[in-house]
Image 1 (spheres, one colour):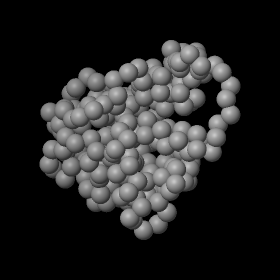
Image 2: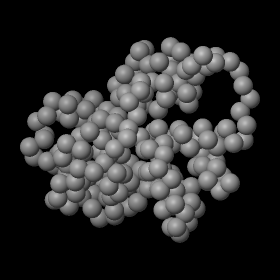
Image 3: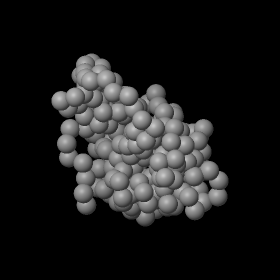
Image 4: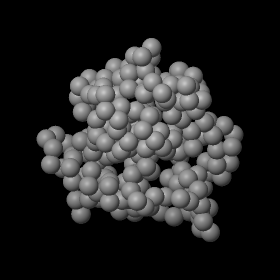
Length: 208
């Protein structure tokens, strides 16, 4: 499957804000956004007026990069969101937030979504007792996500849990820190998502 292999810090600089793509590095002075707060490339420091289309495109790209989703995947999620009841933009964010790799990240098992995606691919988690190694798997209400017993002594996971102990899981996930098990009590809503995404701009872009 195609994937982005270039330096991820360029993506944060292009969007002009931290997307927290490199985990703990993003919280240090080494973060490239703080050191070079302008877009990458030859004309990165030039001033340019952003058009309406440009604003819509940047918002779509920002959402894609937050969740690590490819263009074709993102378009598929938008089509799925448009078929659901309710507002398409909010449905889109709910779908993105329901990805298993995002759930693993939200629970504090990983320092970034990319790291969470790798953990899922390596089969460290089960859903309703069955191993699921598909990062794009969309969790549903009532499902139980559990860290496998054989994976609980992995240094990377233990370190992430300890480092992320301050992070509170969203209210749509009921997390038991003793058993390292989470139950999906509801689908995520707009209020549960703390990312600065203006989803209406994405809807306007795809509605052209």
